[in-house]
Length: 298
Image (cartoon, rainbow, N blue to C red):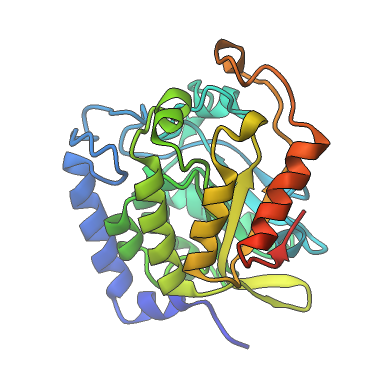
């Protein structure tokens, strides 16, 4: 039986070095590209989160990609708050409202073990960007209690390359969004004008670490899986996004998502007051194929 690489990092003491480095970073926080530089022991920045992670819920999730869900589900831990401020967020009650409770590293580790005991195929951290330090600090406790399943980094794509580098060998599967290739739209919709360049850099580093998605007997084991939400009027420039993904690797596994619906404050933007049409989705799928991509979860 092969074990995830985070166990090897723990056994040779490297995991504790990563924990120390990340805990230093959050004292002048640059975990994400916002680089708020606040001391999260006593203050909060864009993510509105202090030192400890806030968990909104955790359970075996059957609504994720089929290669994550398998038979027994993806062991999903939803973190409250977010480093993005998407006005159309479909989980806005978790990401934009303080709907979560603080957990210690031991409590977070216990959640991981409970999910593994349920038979989940992976531990799926949703919105981990602003609490990656807390996740990795909890890992030794989980490993000592027998954690052996893959870890999934399920982010909005606005990630710091430096933080992702400190995560090398820890997360088996990276599953970021790639939301925008238009800087103005990225600012209008998520408050992150530099989203395109930061997302591209982060995705390249993720792919360098784990490569293309490897699926064995229908279950994802390691690699990069990218989500892209198709939006009305192609305001996010899906055509350019697929070209960038193909440049990273034409073997990139992509979930082209059609489930956009007006939520939260979407009605405040002139283009976001409706769902996408079948034609808009089909056009996005065609752009993806024309870019050279061919591995899709639709």
